[in-house]
Image (cartoon, rainbow, N blue to C red):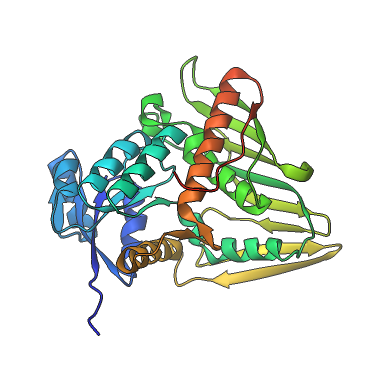
Length: 346
């Protein structure tokens, strides 16, 4: 039996996430990082030398057209996700694109349409979903360990970004909702076990036309289940997910990026609290798991999945629709209804 070849991967962008991605690639089984691209060739060369990447490109075009790159990792700012993902797909590359997949649901639909048209795989880089603590927490909820879910609370807030960061630019798809709130929305949908029917959001904006610096949102699901979340660029650090059920609660203290090489969650029923700890090979092991999963999908022709057992494409499309509705609600001050999401892919 012939050995399946190792996939050659290239990264678009030289931002801060690069350090985490390169660590993830070092332990990956079926993929190796071979190239990086920036619009500034000297910067690309500098970052390539820093992280031991063999090839540096001075344009995004050069990387997506590179015949020695099989998979493109789009780590550009949100405003460039749609354009460069589609261009990479058109060039015959599979694409793993950083979250959020795009700036709108309409862009997400275009991206997946391009993936289908060119018979290439596309997956959103929601790396937190590949932490064992998240998948196991979801399984606990699904098997009824805390009874029927009544409410989900999620938060992702932190200060410290420089004012020139693209996250503060509307044209770059910036704002707290898109940058960190997308995690809260994704986790709320995961633990609620369905799609919201209505959302309501309030936000503090940076000037009249600026991005949202803080946003709180409420998601209404069927059978009276609700979720509430906070995301912010101007708050003290606040992280966590809490799922409240009829017979107990489950808390994930560090759902987005555990500070150590293990994750944990706490299940409380009555006065009894049990902490479940799940060790990982290293702190950034979920990046490796994400890369391994996507490379396995590409090599074996399987559709990408988000743990636990979730169609990644359908999940990304649904998440984008909820983000659209929340953004609209925050701007117009009214709740927004979300029509049932079609079960079939377009």
